[in-house]
Length: 114
Ligand code: DGP
Image (cartoon, rainbow, N blue to C red; front, side, top):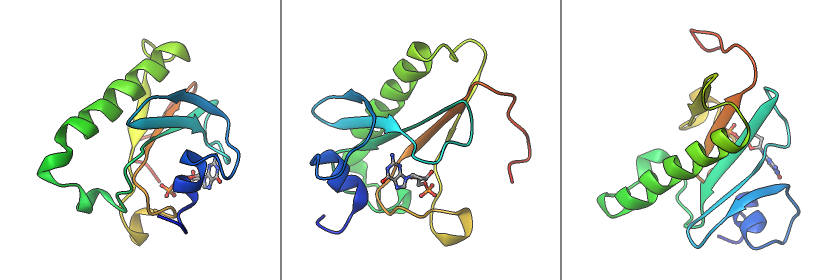
């Protein structure tokens, strides 16, 4: 999608610190980290919100989780613990309308989340 910032990162039209890429997914460091480890995993397919995920996207979504797990392992937070967050629509705080998994770790996470 031409006006989507994450599609522009996928197309390498704007820079990002990319830490993983394959045919269907991309992961990069969040520009505004909220924890010592804060990466984003996105599908290359433009899906605006998790409400727009269809039955046909099942294997893609499970792939994103697999990629997130690999990143957690590579970043050394898999055993300590980490959090995967997906915001959906304005009240959750979603600001980029291309689905993404936040991978947060490297510090104690709080509950309930803010
Ligand atoms: P959310 O608020 O859940 O939609 O999260 C969007 C995240 O995307 C937020 O943590 C900041 C990050 N972000 C926004 N624009 C850019 C960008 O251009 N580059 C990178 N690396 N991250 C971005």
